[in-house]
Structures are given as C-alpha cells and as structure tokens.
Length: 459
Image (tube, rainbow, N blue to C red):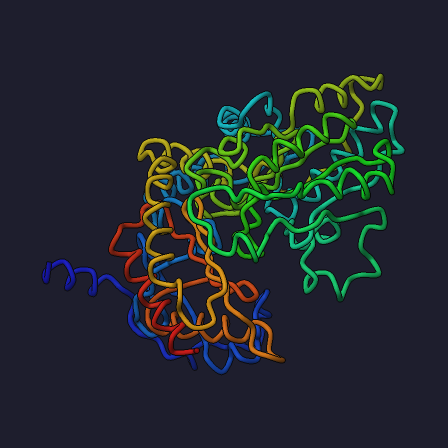
C-alpha cells in the first residue's frame, strides 16, 4: 500500500500556486466570481473518485462533477474512443449529412429507452435538450392541425436549463427574475412536490401524500388555459437541481393519465436521472411511466465531452414526417452546428458500453441505500438540519436559513468540505451528495463524516 501511495503521488501534477493563473478573463458560471478570486478552487487532474487540486490536494468527487461522471474519472475506454475518432472523422456537418457514430449512438440510446421512445434528436447540453423538446411539441401539434396548442406547463422549483424556453418552464426564482420580461408568455407552473411537514425525512421510498398534489393542475391550471390549448407538460422525475426532491407515490403515473386524457405531451427531463442514477436506465423505468419525450445529457458521455438530446416517441416523428410536404422539404427547422458530433457520439458509445460491461446501473442501485443509510444516520438531529431526502444514488440534507442571508450556511459548509477534501453541492439551503457509481463504502463514510462535522462547525 505504501508503494502504491508513492506511485500515485509521483503521477500527480506538481503543486501550482493560484497566483500562476491569470483569472482576469474567465467569467465563471453560477459562481460568486468575486469570492472565488479570493479563494480559488482549481482542479488540474482527476482519476477514479478523486480530483487533484492546483495546490496538490486530493478531493473526493462527491457530486459526479455536477451529476455527470457516473463511471468515475479518466476512464481509458472513453478516452481511447475519442482519440480513435479524432484520427478517423473529426467533424462533419449535421445538416443534410450525418456520420456513422451518430447513427450508432442514437440506436444504442433508443434501445435503452422504455416503450416506443425511438427517435433521437441530438444537441449539446441539457439546456438545449429542454428547448428542443419544447419546439418539437409546438411543431408536432401544428403538423397535426392543432397549432393553437401553445401553452406549456412546468413546475415550481423545476430546472430545465438556462436557455429562454427552459427558464420559462423552469420554476427556480433566482434563475428567472433578471430575465422575466423575455420569458415565454404562455407558461404556467404546477405546485411543488415537497411536503416539509410530513415528509421532511424520506429514505429509499416514495412519499405518500394524503392529498392529491395534482388536483390543482386539473381543477385550476388546465381549467384556466383550457386543456385544448396546452402543448406539453415538462417535469423532472426527481427534482434534482433544486435539491433532490422526490415525487409523491403515484404522482408521475397520475400525470401521465391526465396528459393522455387531454392530448397533452408529457416531457421527462432526465438530464440528471438518466443513465443509471436511479439504479435503472432512466427515471421513467424506475417509476414505470413512458413519457412522450425524454431529455438527456450529462452521464451519456460520462461528462467527458458535451452531448445532449431528446428521444421522441414514434407517433411524434410520424406526424412530422406525414405532414403532406414534398419529401425533399425540411420537416423540422431546428438543429445545432454540433448536433450528433462524431467525437461526442463516439464518447457516448464507449460510455454506454462501459456502463453495461461493469453493470454500473445496478451498482448505483445497490449503493444508493448505503449512501442514504449513512446520510440519515449521520445528519438527523444535527443543528439546523430540517430534512433529509435520499433515493437512488443521491441524497440531500436541508438546512434552515440564516436570517437575512439565504444560502450562506450551505455555501460556507461547501467551502469547508472542499478544504477538507470532499466536493459536495450547495443548492440553496441544501447540500447534495451524488457520487459516481463506482463509489465504495469508505468513500461514502468519508463524505458523510466530513459533511456532518462541517454542519456542526457552522451551527
């Protein structure tokens, strides 16, 4: 073991002072840039479950690097696939032409999806996937003679990326308030899915509500807009970015029934829950519900290279193809320069093969209860802890706010954990753990213990 530690130490990049990096030009996203420059946090290498920082420290990746790195860092088969593809076909236009990797990746993704989710539209991110699915919904209804269906319904605290469509159907106030004048006009939002009184603490089960959380959708929202004007309803199976909030038991099946009843498309945003986080292919499989469209990104390439997409059911594609236009006419005026990029698709193929060979979806499912058990045991009863939620290989501990400083307690704890060698995610008043599927019990113990100590420290 000592020899191995010495060997690994010799392979790590040398420590580099933060002052070496010129920080005047990069504007960091979703970051307090002023504070970051005071206390820079810079990764220079990664392997397996760990990052190496600019100052030579090891940090456990407790959040799969923003839910992306399911198979762990620096997986050779993915890197080799990218290198091979760069030497074979580096890029080709996605318009009027395609490439072999895109067809193969689309097939493999479709084969993982439930039901007749068979048609894949590629893009580059979850944000682009959200806007693509909304545009598909409008185009589909227009193609079948119901162009008046132009109302979208999202959910409070939902997150569907940062493009204008996704922000509009999303329900995170901080993401919307600066851009309100330009958000889509025909949008409404269902109530949030969390009951902090009766289900503050929930582990490896679906919360059972005594009331119908979708009653307002049927009796108020749909009645207000008239169901015949609604194009689509979009939800995350589990509200991930807001802080891992779990839907009530039967909620998604009931939502499917309501959409079927009124001819409304149902879109699942599976950017976080897709490709194994729930121990299944998708959240749709976990909850036994087939949406009409399924948005994906993140783990599809293990976070190594950007790729996202929307998988549509056959009837949506068929309606677009059978609109009566000449066969040379473009059916859907939408796409991106890098849609189905051959290098990204090669990475996706290698990632999905690796996930299958190592049975990592099932492993995520088996390690999920281990993570949840540890979180509930360590955090319940700590100062300022008001809730813990765990399901699949993810969990969140919710804290009470500091008066007049919302989010500061969680942010301070995030910084403290980072300095102690564990990367956690601060999401509002929540601290989230969602490690790679290769996580071992000792990693979980360290992550949970460091976080628990920090919660005590910042009481």
